[in-house]
Image (tube, rainbow, N blue to C red; front, side):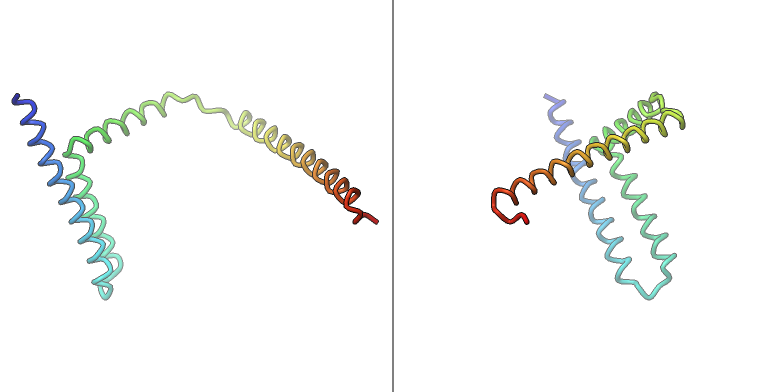
Length: 126
């Protein structure tokens, strides 16, 4: 029974945190455009600070922690990828370009043939 109460309390706090994040971001964006007479550098630094604080608050929620874990696991998986060498990349790119050119020529030929056939049947050919 207490786990349900804890989950509800956690959910309420998460909702409050997300509302705070939205209010902070909205205020930051509003302030960025409202105080246009101030230096752009100053406004960008303040906006980045607000975004950083918002991210910190968002990471304190359950969904934020799950997102952070997902990004960390993604980083680990990307490091496991065996990337092709430069030579392999160039060879595969060349093959793809040749195949695209070949298919384009085939489609152009088919289109020309069908155009000729339609002109023949409609009597528009000279």
